[in-house]
Image (cartoon, rainbow, N blue to C red; front, side, top):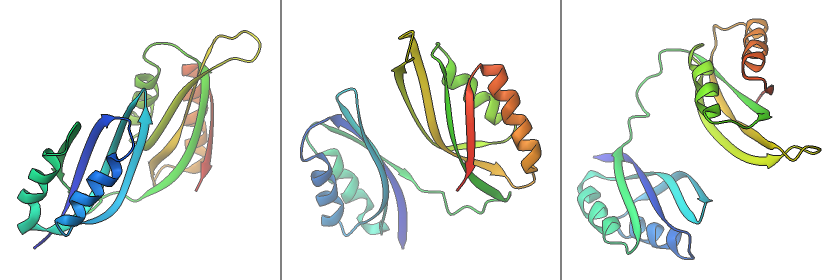
Length: 172
């Protein structure tokens, strides 16, 4: 039986990490389907979706766990579960003064309207004139189809006001 699994990994950032993981997956007849990999603060982290024969699962897990200096975990992929609500994917970009808890505030405001973050990239920069910390976020969100576009625009204006941020939204 064919299984889809999710592999999470973290290691120090160094050449050869992806090659070692890809080689191990290939040695166990796994098919690397999709991934998100990134370097952050000297670490390399990723999430990989792999398809393989269930009979290879234990051997793959053993092979990945034996990789030197790479912390790997396997999880069952349940993404094939049927989605009950129609959604549309929107891109967003948000900027505002940095402060502790800002990601919690953004995610709570979105969750309040049943909006799911599908991708989130954040970074800190400096405001042009003052040099104060400027928080920037961009990503993708899944918005329930039943939310009217005008209502959605109003909700985001409200969220932007509440968080003292500039938020722009575009349909993909």
